Structure formats: structure tokens, C-alpha cells
Length: 449
Ligand SMILES: Nc1nc2c(ncn2[C@@H]2O[C@H](COP(=O)(O)OP(=O)(O)OP(=O)(O)O)[C@@H](O)[C@H]2O)c(=O)[nH]1
Ligand SMILES: [Mg+2]
Image (cartoon, rainbow, N blue to C red; front, side, top):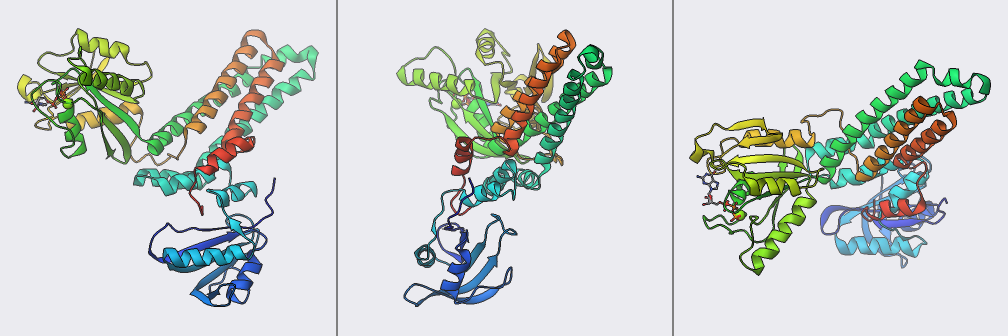
């Protein structure tokens, strides 16, 4: 399992820059330093030197840093060569390193080694990639918290609590004659309840982390001419979609990427839904439906003068249950209604005018609320869908354990469910993750990371 070869890559982004860094990790790092710089730099000290190729000609002059194992990013001997950030110089420097026995690193291979050597757990390694990819300050802050271990700590605490309850149940089973009494102990039921509550809280935080990570898909849909494209332009702050008073103006999907208090939104404008007049519109309406089906949130736009009619109710009825929804009563400058949000007939309504902008703040608040986003959420951490799935499976198993214990006093079954829950949590931190999944996760990282 532990790698024994030496890997190298340019760790700075491609292109020109003041500084470029070649990173080397593995047992040959020291020999490579010796060969290229003439001596092994003292551990963790800045060493200014020339970098020479195999023919002893100087490629560049810069700084060499040597981090002997295990106190390095990967846990192996690591060498960093910091030279000038030009693509050709970096290429020549990397080629010289490869000549001395290193091989080109795969994407994410440095992080993967850090994980395999126990320098960080899997969710922390993922947070490194998420920090690099973060699209907003809020996302970067959350990724940093995950990197610091905020998420891993919660998951480990949950796993620890699970172990305790399981041990308790298994101990009861060693005394069969008293088993039933032990298992109906109210303290045990209480501990299971606490566990379920803690799991639910972690799932909620992780859900917010996923929103920050991936962004929220918000689809604008409704009948023609109600002002979907006007609202899209207002949200995006620019004239992205064509607006006319001809019903059926928008025929294709139009996408904008915006931020709402740090929450990334993918706003999607669609063709007005009606019986299509021609084949182009038919395709447009089909596309509108497929966007609605994969949305996180639907903004059903209606003209406030007519309100929600049967055609709108049809759209709501066809929208999958998991999609959050807000009815936008647009054109209040014409209907004379006051801007604001209100719950009516089981739906959240926001009254606004895409023309004057009145009520847009209420829509933004309603949007954040319906996806469960809290601004300045200090306790938030970055998470991925993979983590949410694992937490959901753990929650299902804990619920099942609780049920078999309460209804049938079946300690053995309950202990098995708790073991499954523990295993699901272990997938998050990487304690029980298959090589395939690891490969899949790290291959999405950038080269040199
Ligand atoms: N007075 C007023 N007019 C609006 C408002 N919102 C949109 N309109 C007008 O309504 C007409 C249709 O607006 P669009 O944004 O193109 O409507 P749409 O829903 O995208 O229409 P389709 O693309 O045809 O489905 C345009 O003339 C807009 O100027 C509003 O809040 N107030
Ligand atoms: Mg339109």
C-alpha cells in the first residue's frame, strides 16, 4: 500500500509568474537535491543555490527547501525547488528532476500520499482541493475549517459515541439471562436519541457545506411573458437574457453564475411553458422541464395581476418533491401590491417587480431560507455530496438500531446496525474507503497538489 517511488511535479499553475515551484516527494528527494544543487540543504532552511541539469549547466537560480520525513506535507522526504515561474524554465527543471529517478506525479498524488501516511484524513485532503477551488470567501473559510479538522472531529465524535453504545449493547448480550433488562434500560434509549440528534445536526451543517461547495441550482420557470428573463437580468445585474413583450421570447436555457452573501447560485432562465407553437419552442419547453427536474430551487414566476392559475398549479405539481420552491408574484408595479414575502396556500410567495427592483431583497432572503443557508455561519465547514450520502446511511442505520431495540429488544441486530453506521462514518474520514473510491477522489485534484 505504501508507495516507495519518488514523484515530482510543477506545483505552481501553468503560465508565467514571478516564482515557479517544482515539488518532489519520496526516498530519492535527498539525492535529487544533492545532484541538482550540489549539496543537501539543511532541513527546513532556506538554501539559495543554482539548479543544474545533467550536463552541469545552470538551468536557473533559486531556493531549495528540504523537509525530511516525517515532518512534511506528504510524510515522506520532500524537496521544493523554487525558481522563476516561466513554463520553459519549469519544464527544464522538472526534466532534470525526472532524470535523477523521480517520475511525473499523477493528479492529487501528493495529497494521496499525505493521506496514506496519516498526515491528514480523507475529508481534510478533500478540503485542500476545495480550498483551492473555492468560489467565494464563505466557501474558502469553510474549506479552511474542514482542513483544520472541524468536520473530521465531529465525525470522529459521532463514531466514538456509536462505539460506546455498541459496546454497551454487546456487553448486555454476554449476560443472556439479564439481557432484556439491560436492553430496556432507559439510559440506553436516551444515548441513542442523543446520537440521532447529533447526527442530524452534523448532516445539516454538512448540507450547508455542500451548498457552498457546489452552489445552488435556481431555475426560473413559468408561463410566457411573466418576467422570468427580466428577473434573471435583475439577479445577475446585467442584460444577460433578451426581454421583449412577445410571449415566447426565450427559447433556450440561459445560465448565470452569481453570489448571494457568499452562497454561489447557478441561476437558470428557461423558455415559457405553454403548448409549443413550433419545433424550436418544443425543444425549449422540454429543456425547461429537464432543468426543473434537476433544480435545487424552483422560482415559479407569475404575473401578480392574474396570480397562480391552473397552468401554474400544473407546473408545481410536476416539480419533483425534493425541489425547494418559491412563487414569485412579479409586476407588482402594475398590480399595485406591496413588495414582500408571505406564506399562502402552502407555498412561499414573494411579491416583487423585476422592472423597479422592489421586493428583490425579500426574494434573496426567501431563497437563502429555502435552501437552509445562514450567513456568517461561523460553525460551517466544507463538505461534499459523498459525505452527505455517508451521513444519511449512518442515520438510517442508527434509526434502524433504535427501532429493533425498542420493538423487539433485539440486541444483536441493533449492534449490527450500529456497526454499519460506524462503517459509513469511516468512509468520510477514509478509515474504511476502497482503493477505487480513493483513486476516484484524488484523480480530480490538480497535478502538483
Ligand atoms: N411593468 C413591468 N413589466 C415587466 C416586469 N417584468 C417583466 N416585465 C415586462 O414583461 C415583458 C416580458 O418580460 P420577459 O422578462 O421577457 O418575460 P419572460 O417570462 O422571460 O417571457 P418568455 O421568455 O417569453 O417566456 C417585457 O415587456 C418586460 O419588460 C415588471 O416587473 N413590471
Ligand atoms: Mg424569457
